[in-house]
Amino acid sequence: MDKKRSFWERITGGIHVEEEEYEEPKKNSVGGGTGSKKDKKGNEWIEEENEEAELAVDIYQTPTDIIIQTFVAGVKPDDLELSIARDIVTIVGAREENRNIDEENYFTKELYWGRFSRTISLPVEIEPEEVEATEKHGLLTIRLQKVDKEKTNTIKVRSI
Image 1 (cartoon, rainbow, N blue to C red):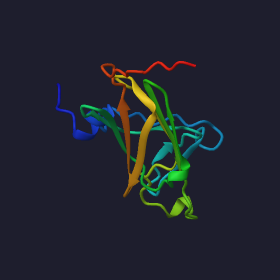
Image 2: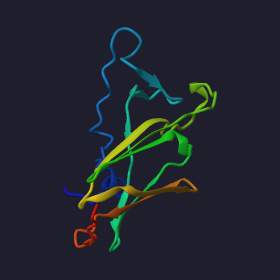
Image 3: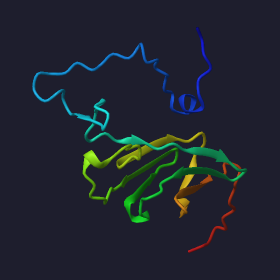
């Protein structure tokens, strides 16, 4: 039976798992599983270490620019690294958790803390020297100037 996917499933590419279909993870004899933890209700989940998250981005164009926007709330501008080539942009950063809260005191823990990155292949060439990146209220906006292939330059020849 095909069911309409939720908004979250459509944007993340995830799928809905029915309760009956869920299989309990197999526990290993020492400590209940590799890298696993339990929440307040005794449900077990696996915590992935050193995993790097991928940023969600919006990319659009104007007649002269390519614009990339992404949310980087909680990240200092100095902790962001942008790498720009003619047709590829890479955004790398880290959101550091500076709270000292014991795991057993959490009811829900959904915020992402740690390293993230995104490499974007651009649909057109851009001028790597003509890039403007700004952050306002957690929204990073990168404005990339398109290469103007129609642009010509007339040069006067000098005699030496």
